[in-house]
Picture 1 (cartoon, rainbow, N blue to C red):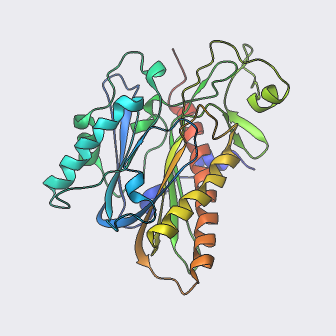
Picture 2: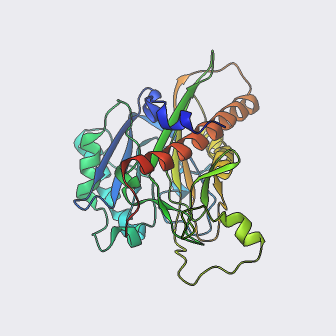
Length: 319
């Protein structure tokens, strides 16, 4: 797999899905922040939570079998559990715009407290600022928004800086599928058969944490074992809530291809799905979900690699 294409290719990313707006805001230190995904016309939501240590909000209400309420905004944020109250800023913005009087704002956080070095966690004001900055233009990547405090490779060796990435594709004659990821895993980020961002030995080479685990090498007591990669996939396809949840589950394959080890007991991996419904398919439900889930896994894998590599170009990891 060619790593260069992930560094050089530019595109709209998640905003390639018409109706999606993305906004980012960072605190004054630049070491933590918020990313807001808005869909003012509403979307059918879904979610998959595969990590062993998640920190989320409003995930139960978007699972199958619950009320059929549209979602108008999703918050991805730093600050660990302390960042969840920032969703109030998204709610306030949606009410101000007259979009919804009691908005449901699903949210997920990354653990970036060790990198933030005492900076206050994102709050409602920061999330509100991200809403004000939201637009349909190309999405910036790297150390922006919730990716400001992201790092990767934390069981063995020294972590590297990571960040936010995004990618999209249009299936010929079919729907648009796109992804955005905040890449903060305990594992290493892989591109094909090569680690591109992850835990480093003292000499600057990659540890290969998966191989170290399988070799029975004990993890250092200094390991940073609170992490999480959080993401959102969106599509122009029309889906039911059950179908959107299934697409989110299938997108997990892309995360597993790009990160190893993945979905550990120390990761809170969470993927949201938003279906905006402008594209109507003649496929059966099973055919459409399989197609979208396969595409979602591909763009999520690319978004993760892009986010990790973009962070290396924008700022080196420092403690």
